[in-house]
Image (cartoon, rainbow, N blue to C red; front, side, top):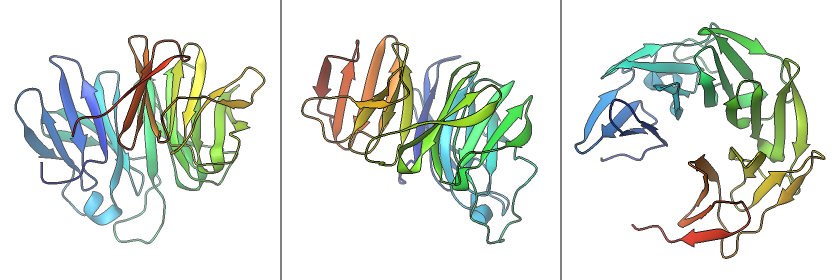
Length: 250
């Protein structure tokens, strides 16, 4: 691989395979070997509308999204379908818009968020723009189960989808940008570049102490384990209380 990935994702079936996304739409993949494919090499893709930002596995299929509100779904090896919402800038048009995150528990309801606080929902792959309570950039949207959906981003703002509408739930102390969210042990966790928080029942955030760590940024929970990924710093926990730090191997 001669390029820098912007996101990674993994599919389990028919055999485990890791995918790496480049901003230009290059996708590297492998489960023993290594190969590459391109999402869209025309002017309607990253070349004409800006880089891709996110890669996510949703219901066993890969989705990529990015600037210019680009959305793609991997239909087969080397085949990516265009699933853009109806409102997109034409190639070359100067319009700073785009998606920074996409998620869903199934393909009946997929969420995408991005610049200026915009929020879109795809029901049966038909996109509609939702009213947003903020004009701040949203860095992440996470769907943990039906009707348990959160988004977060600049200035530590956290939104929730409540009663079929998006509302401001809370803001983390200090107002640092939030880069990732994760659900673990019945609680919502939020990561900034330098701190980790959990949402309390009273809709306030409490900082989580992880001894020895000063860098966070990204989270992942699976099989009863919550991981934190920072710059050259990793840590995991099975109870959100006792953390084990690990040094990544380069």
